[in-house]
Amino acid sequence: MRQTDVLIIGSGVAAFQLARKLRSDINVMIITKSHMKESNSYLAQGGIAAALGEQDDSEKHFHDTLAAGRYHNNPDAVRKLTATAPSVIKTLVQQGCPFDKDAQGKLLLGMEGAHSENRIVHGGGDATGKTIMDFLISQRPKNVEVIENSFVYEILVENNTCIGVKAKNEDNQIDYFLAHHVVLATGGCGQLYRYTSNAETVTGDGIALAYLAGAEIADMEFIQFHPTLLYAGGKTCGLVSEAVRGEGGRLITEDGKAIMKDVHPLADLAPRHIVSQTIYEYLSHGEQIYLDISPVKDFSSRFPTISDLCRKNGIDLKEKRIPVVPGSHFLMGGIQTDLVGRSSIQSLYALGEVACTGIHGANRLASNSLLEGLFMGENLARWLNTQSFSKSHKLPVWREPSENRSIKDLPDLQELKKAMMDHAGIVRTRAGLMSLINWLERFGGEQVGDGNLDHMQKDTLTRMFMLITASLIAKAALQRRESRGGHYRQDFPCEKNHGWQQKQIIHCRKKEKGKVDEQIKVATIT
Ligand code: SIN
Image (cartoon, rainbow, N blue to C red):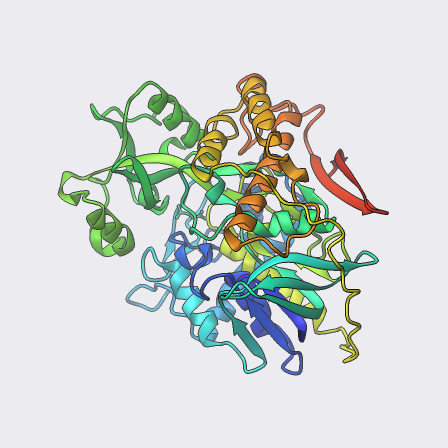
């Protein structure tokens, strides 16, 4: 049994920003199921958006974020984020974070889709995630302990207050961690889909854990599909950053036709859902799409990570075209929180992609995610720093297994990923979602997690968490009978501003006297 003041699950940008901003007398533990440097944050190629240019101001960044989010965002949250972004970057620069600069020492500001100004700060060209993560990790204070290879599988809740978690260590032994405050920063759920830019560890655990604990989960139908994942050998092999299109790259067919030209005024830099849907249309007619990089100057030095990825996967950059397909990239929904990171369960918080703060709306604007992690990590630290930490922890009531439910069957992961891609992916229909939901329910759907989980192996727990998260996505996508941002219904292809704008689909389950009550409700964004 271990005890601490603040327990953080996950090791991305939000986790390390929070940890380093907490008071030095607060004991902090970061638990990660793999290694500290294995996260979506570390992989991020795109940068951090901030209105730093001479022509730019945070109001423009605010409006771009709302337009990309299809006005499903919480405007107050977006205003605070965009107004704070310049000082977030300036502080990091002052502290020594090595962002890319020009010969005069001025920050280079790049362009990405749906931004009206050049405002993307990068590190290492296309290695911004690595740059910022290496910097944050190097700043880790002495009061922060990191525990690797520890898989959290249950959140301990007493009287709607979180008191800790149960985890399995490297030897599959159970560890109890008790804490005054528990923070989920576990990332999204990209690995639910056959094609994804996400790290292998990003399997929706945090969402399933919070759901099983009774926290409110919102906006699960909004999944962002990134238009350009490198496609080689019949599979996706990583991201080809939107910054390539920001530097002039164009999407073309085998015959060289520019596919975005007449689709949207911003052409290749249109919002991601529009570009992804356009590519999907061509792919479903059997046409391969390429990213033509011939207009991009000094490709290999500007994009070293992507060049390396191409070489490793047998793509000859001399051909000047990279085969691409769209794939899951970011979850806009997640654990419902306020701008401090508080969930609907006392002392349980969520930060970064696992959280739904209302900042991203129905579709996240490019390069707003590392920004959100930095912003929210600091917000929560500021609030926790005002709290007092009494050292007398009550142990949780030991919950002897009431039922030793064995889960008979869980879906095969490749089948699950294919079914999600086919039916809850870029294009959705009622019939497809119904067949997906029926299939998921054969394995128990989102209700599968009841009973004692102690005896399960980590890979079984992961599959169960994936099943739960997939079911939440499918049910929310069926419920929302309109198209908006990352949610496209072929049978309801338009936005319904009277009816669905600013309306959220929220999942919640309560367990009282051994009975589980699963609810799905529609509420207005506040
Ligand atoms: C990209 O570089 O295209 C990804 C950036 C992001 O998703 O914000």
